[in-house]
Length: 293
Image (cartoon, rainbow, N blue to C red; front, side):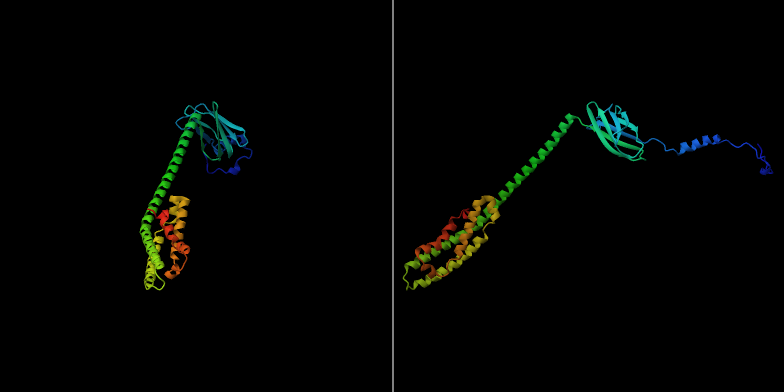
């Protein structure tokens, strides 16, 4: 049809037929189809036993909602894969896969707009579970044995180290012990000479001087012995409670000998029993097991 530019549309008759409503239905359907969301969201996954290289074929896979109502179901292929349509709404869902006497449930969340939800369903072979348990137990046993063995080795090493330290202390104390014993013998000799001389004898002044000299030497030897004394923890680690008693006896003997009178007259004027009590720490110290190499 030709269109003339000089036609006045107001001159057209007003009773021309109007288009029917049904002429627009096909166009509406086109727009409706184009606007409708395209389906295709799926739930896909894999069924296997213990390891992915052991697929489970023919397993019934059922989809349930949080209300425990069945939504869909399918079977896994020989390769263990399965695919089913995704649910219409977002929410919590779970799959139940059944293969023979085995059944496995897997919970998951689904959100609308996800093109696919991938789910792995893992069955466990009881025999494989036992093997895995034994492997786990063996690993734990190995850890326990290694830990206990390491602890025992550490304990033995520590004890050996403490024994070595105690030997070193004993060697250091040996020289000081010999000096203490030597001075004790000298002091005992001076005291015996004092008791044998007359009170007005000129030799008594010499004996007083000798006593003070040996007392000063004894104090230095006691200081050296005290400095070489082992630590209580070392003694206890090697000798236990018995070692504690020996260490306490050694300290007591050292302190008693330090309090020995500086003046010979004080000791000489004592009774025989009191003199023996003053000199007894010498024998206690010499008999102490810690001073025996």
